[in-house]
Image (cartoon, rainbow, N blue to C red):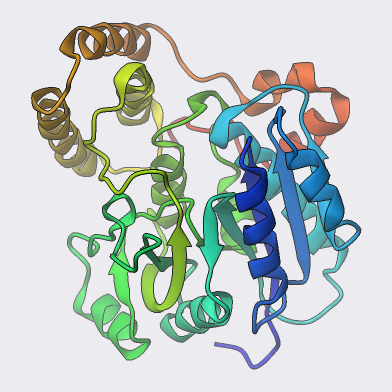
Length: 329
């Protein structure tokens, strides 16, 4: 732990939810622990998202992308920009963090303060908030699981910080230390949506500690209250393809963990199929995802974002520690 004041750069990725974005940015602006920098990535929205983001300038740095790069691309750009802003302020003492969320994530007033306190008290590199739906129920889409095989010391440190040791976190209020980001790079852009936060958080946490901090509360204003095995329709393609990419190519999990999480994924796919209202659509998405998961691989981030211009590609390349989503020797 350190007594120096932490520096936090918040990142929000936005796409066609202008009113929720306004609510999210206002909630971040009024946190009990002020952020040092704010980054908004507008993923080529077609509504008033750009206008809402502009309302918060110059307090917020806004990156407007020429096309929708999905959550994965938006967070890669946003985290890289946040790191650039933190590095530019590196002469200020204190640990640095990036605080990551979607535009439908509304942090309660003390969410950041509690999250930083929990992470620092536990000596962790990553923290995750308690995520609730708008009616106060804990959101099943973001329910944490205790880290399998956590040591007694890890559990004790987390318990002392009033937290739970975890192996993964979602992009609904995830706090990552700048040191971990410098070491591990950025999310894999070609994932687009689905499993991008799982791959990234488990990569950050393979050799580091992470905690779930129940005192830090964020409201996830999804349209429906549901879990990850709810019927996704055609988007099931991304779940299958990305999970295969992760299991086959990512360095985020150990070989044993890949077996465990692979088996867990198969069971979840079966539950998804059993609850589907249109299994023909699901079968088609599964078939395409299975094919592409075996036959293709995610491109390096700089290549995946090359069409967005030199400035964006150069920024992302600077903070990719190694080609994203590839095995480490």
